[in-house]
Amino acid sequence: MEQPVRTKEQPVDEASKRPELPRTWRPRAVRWVAYGMGVLIVGTMLVLAIVLPSDWRMLDRVLIVGMGLAFAGGLHMLGRPRLIATEKNVIVINGIRTHYLAWPEVLDIRMPVGEPWPCVDLSDGTSLPVMGIQSTDGDLSRRSLEEFRSMLDRGEATEPERPA
Image (tube, rainbow, N blue to C red; front, side, top):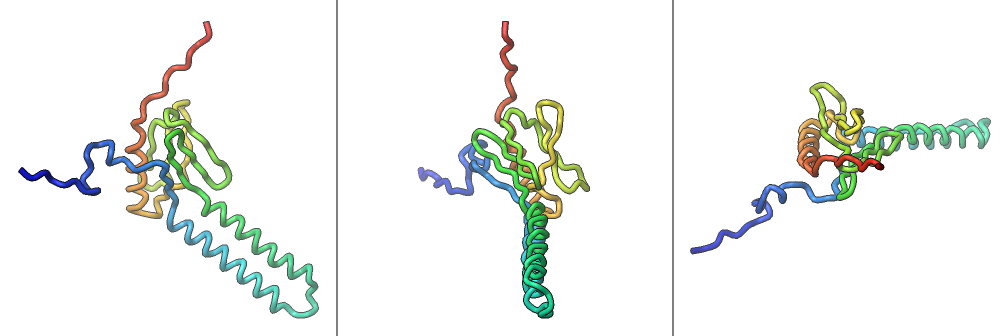
């Protein structure tokens, strides 16, 4: 009797269907637009600084390029978000803040229809927006959401020990 050969597409058990860690999710469309616009704005400001009339001083030209770089920095905040799952924790990087969460702190992730990004429900009763998965990515965002949700069964948080 011939033994079937298992391939990568045929997992041995349910645990092998989980994504390998560490895993990073990033929005695709927003990142392309943010960084594309940043390059376009800085390039436009550079060309403008070069072709300005000669009665404009060097400081004016530097400030025009600096303004383009400031706009690009603001756009970087839109392209920066991501969600990272590691063995020990979950890292949520939004536009300005970075949150480090232990796996037991994350209870669920949900993205109601029409919402721009999902929220994770935390064990302390609060929720945290996750801009690293965005609904503008369509099917990619749904797959990413399900992929992250499949990792959530890492066990519940234990009660902390109370001093006697």
